Length: 389
Image (cartoon, helix red, strand yellow):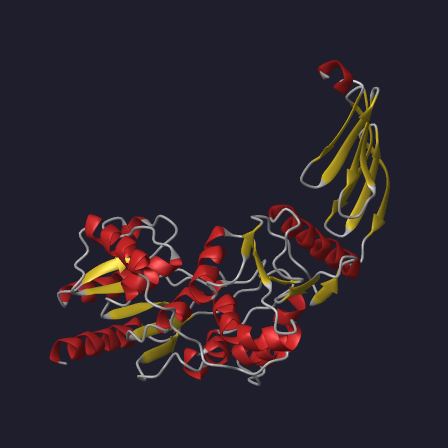
């Protein structure tokens, strides 16, 4: 059998089907069927690659031809690839003929989508629960929080689309790409012109209406894990503030400003949990430890205040109704996406226009042009009211 395999075998890998006959090995793309590689006794003779928006062809390692690939072609390629990866992950035993791709979606957009999921399911999926597709482990955690009854698959590969919103393959499987680049191009133009809020833009593109966000059901395991970790780092769970000085899609505020805020919080007798993903020398003495999104939400329920840069995480934590101070910085240019000024960011992404987030009127928002002294005064007022209340 081993001797026979030297002359012939066929094997299916992640993206390609590899076939060997005598000394010739051929690899074929499993999604689209075209030949990607030909080897003769291990020596590459022919290779085809799809890189960005260009198909490249090589003979003996030398590129001899290339042709451009349109955005529509690339979108089709990426969506069919996502369907293929779902089928592979589930051994072709799909629980639905509908797939919702959240690849490339930030946490805030995911949070708002789940408030619209029931409507979307009725309007776009004929009432059938779609399979949720994500490209990061932390996104799967968010799915566990807000869509616990849905199948969620993490392909752990960033596959994005430019303009495609929907595609159906030959087996009748339909995939929705919820947040392509064109969604953000339209949205940001409207926000810069002061004509829309980003939740409205999401609902419009999905063909549904804005609906209230909600707090996931209490989970004893999540809470236990969060509190045990906090106790390990000796966080004062009866009197603490969560500080979130990072945001992946926004400009940063100098750490020196956050140090001023933290110093005031401590001077008022409160402990601080610093939620960061990177090491900062200015914060080396602060209590910081990793928590999953659902664990952090459980910890946040015990806090007296949450303060930080406006981000998807802050949006998720706001649903706990714990007092919050959010600072809106400028959003920088991102490849094809133009930047958004701090004040436009505040007006277009304000949490006060998201149903369900501000029931107690305790979310305070500022553009990053606001003097840090004003924010510190707000911190004092909130924490003093906690003591007096």
